[in-house]
Length: 424
Image (tube, rainbow, N blue to C red):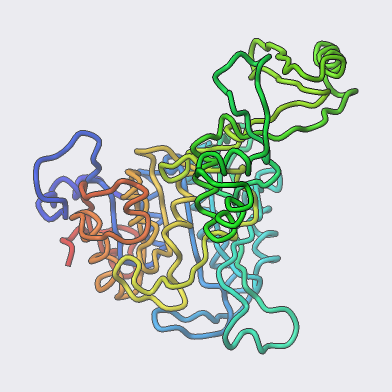
C-alpha cells in the first residue's frame, strides 16, 4: 500500500482531542474491504513487520449469522484459508506469532494446513479456550456439551521466537498453613505456629472463632495471607538424591538440630532454609503481579478457563451476538506476543475487539473487515477508545484514558490498492 495517501489525507484522521503525546500512535489503520485484496496491498509495506496476527475466521459451521455467512463448501473454505494464511506468514516478523481462533468443526484440517504453511516445528500451542458453561439449551443435547473453542498458536521461526512470560491468578494454596511469628528475627530464632493461630492473634480472636470467621468471610484470611506473604510458609521434604551435596549436608544437620532454622546461602538463586530435615517454602515466592496486584499466580497454560465469554453484550458498546470475543482474551494474546509499539493485525475484525485492546495496550494495529458493520460498529467503537469514552473491557487494567488515533481506508472493489477516507 502506497503510504503517501496517509500523509495527504492526514486531516481526516480520527484522534483524541488535545496535544500529541510522545509515544502515542496515529498510524493505526481500519480498512473496509476484502481481506485477501487488502493483505496483498499491505504486503509491500508490512512484509516481515507484523509482530502479532490474531484471526477469528468463519468456523464453517453451515449457519448464517447477522453479520456473516458461516457455511461454504469445505474445499473452498480450506482454499480461502490457505490463500490468506500464506500472505499472513509473509507479513509476520521473524519472531512473530499467529493466533487462529477456531471451533472443532474444521480444527483438524486447519492444523494440517497450518503445519504445511508454517512448518510443524513452528506449532507452538493448541490452546483450549472455555467460552461458555453447560447451561441453557446446550445442556439438553445428548453426549458431551461443547463449552470450548481453540486458539492455534504458531510462530514464524521457533529459533527466534521469544514470547512474554505470563501468569494467571489462582486461589490461595491451602498447603501454606504455617506462619513465622518473628520473621524479622535472625533465622535461627524463627518460631513457627499454624496460620490459623497467627490469623486469630491478628484479629484478636480465639482460634475457633477465627476458624468460623475464615469460613464465613474467606476473603479476610486471603487478605491476611497476602499482607504477610513473606511469613506464610509450608514445609516440603526435598528429594535427597536430587539436591546438591551442600543441600544434603544441610538437611542432615537440620535433622540433628531440630529446634533451629538453618540457612544455605546461594549465589544466584534464593537461599534455602531448613528445619527438621524439611525445606521452608515461602508463599511470597508464589505471588505475581497481575492487573496491578500481587496475587498467587501460576505460569500460563494451554487451558484458558478464566476468560469466559459470558455477559459480553455491552463490552465495547457494540452488540455482536455469536461473534464478539472478550477483551481479556485479546489482552492475553497481545501481551503474550508483543511489546508496546509493535504492530498487531486482524483481518477478520468482527466487532473490532482486537483493535480496541491493542490501542488500550499501546500497540499499533491494523484491522480489516468487509461488512457494513465496519462503518456502523467498528469505527464508532474505536473512536470511543481514542476519545477515552470506553470504560469497558480491559480499560481499567490497562490504565487507559484515551489518546492516539487511527486512519480509515476503503479497498476499491476488485482492486488490491486502497483509498483513504475519513472515519464515518
